[in-house]
Amino acid sequence: MTNRPRFNTEGSLTAGLAAVGLFAVLGGVFLTASFPVPVGFPDGAAITKSLGAALFDIAPGQLMGEGEAAVPGEGFLVAFLLVGVLLDAALDGAVMLAKREEAGENVSLGTGTDTPEDAVAADGGPSSSDGGEN
Image (cartoon, rainbow, N blue to C red; front, side):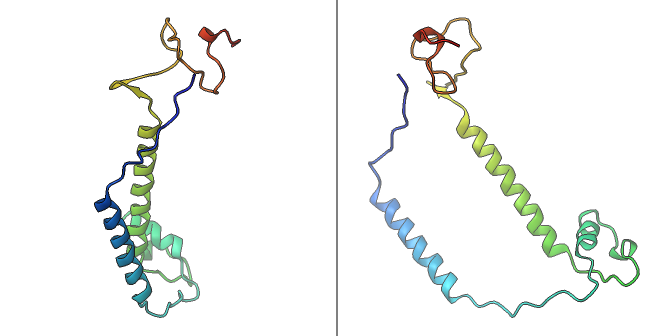
C-alpha cells in the first residue's frame, strides 16, 4: 500500500485575498510600466570579454584585441550572480522536498536490515517484504 500526498483543502480567506491583491498590484505595475527604447551594442563590442573582466576585476582594456570595444559589464554581472544564487536556492529546495521524513526522522529504503511491512520500492513496485521479486 502506498501513501499518497493529501491536499490541504482548508484554505484561509485572508491568504486568498492577499494573493488576489498582490496579483492585481503586479498586473497594474506590469501594464503601466514604461521602458526606454533599447539601444544595441556598437560594432566590434566584445561582450563576453567585458563580462569576464568584470567577473575577475580586471581592466577591460587588458583583454580587448584590435578593434574590439569594451561594454560596461557590471549590470550583466549582477544579473549573472543573481541567477546563480536563485538556481542554488532552487536546487536546495528540491533536495529538501525530495527527502522523506516520518515523525521527524529521515527515512531511507534499503539501508537497514529490517524492512517495514508498508515499505514501497523506489520504482513503485512491491518491496521484498510484500513477496515481490527484486
